[in-house]
Image (cartoon, rainbow, N blue to C red; front, side):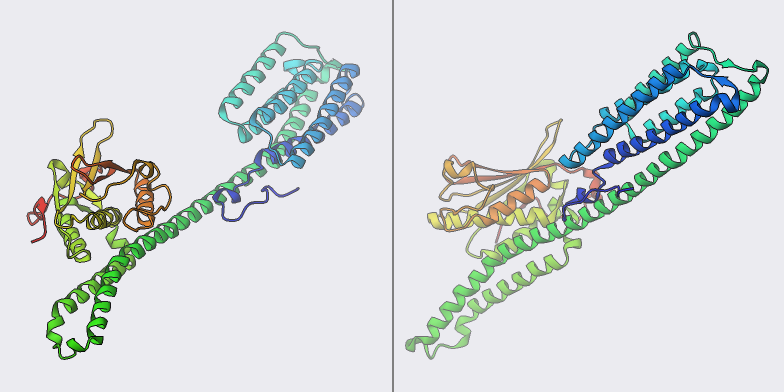
Length: 461
């Protein structure tokens, strides 16, 4: 027999699943029908000589011929599916089994009806249907088989026996043959098909594991890209300070300047280096940083770390109402907010409003259908043109203050992975309000609040 799986595309999770399962089922029905027709032909030839049963040959031969023609058409249909790369539908397989049940009913009608020991041959056909078809189709076929059986309790052509006294022996012999044929069909077809299904389940499990591995790698790639974006700000600060130090060293007028005069610059460089180390440590310790934290316990530390990135900017953050007690995925939410706040700080700097503090407000929108946690970053910068706002986050694009839009693209992608979204609105006093909306997590995700939780409002001293 040919293999049970079709060629697959590498890298696709569904590629290792046997996509031609229905085609293999049709092929097995095709060969099983030839085998059953061969058995019918043997019985037609030998029944009278061996069992003394006179059969109505004309209708039985007509039924056998129609079965042969139908099976030849089935063979052509299989070739068509193979050449076109198609797959039989469940309705087509149901039609195949319906034809088989009809042929069986016709044969039984002319050979004793419900008194024929082969009348239980309906059961292997229904077992095959249960193995390859949805339950609705199986119920329909079972109802059809019961209707045919019930009809043959009333109307059928009686068997013509040479010796009616041997009817019981003939019936027992027929029941034995029926059992052998049914057991063979179930063993060859249904058991083999069950093995294929078990193999498919194993392959599906492998596909799920591969998907999980791919998801972990994709998440690590996203985090690495976000970390690379975050680390650009402290590196830019270090580059500016290094350039100033180099210029001072080359200036003859500053040749006698003591090192202690550069102490603030050196301290800033140390802070930026520590910030770079903490960002890289977060990439290494992804398992720990991905844990959920209460917003009121996480916010102060986050604001302090962000201030190290922008020592000349000011950030005022506050949590409103019940949002303080909610858990938040600190790593990813922190990355998104860092990108939004970085852009807001650069926009305000470009607009000459660096003295105005940025504002981060966190609130819970208590919608009964879908409670939403909202993070709003407000700046008084240059604003975002409406032509860009609709496409912002969908692809990298150049911003008004010199950015390439990669950070916003990463932030939108991360928000969508968390089931949320980013949106930007004009501020009534000028500037932009960037809004991160996430499904509100359950309060049961974290233990009760610690008595040492940080205050709900924080701002740099």
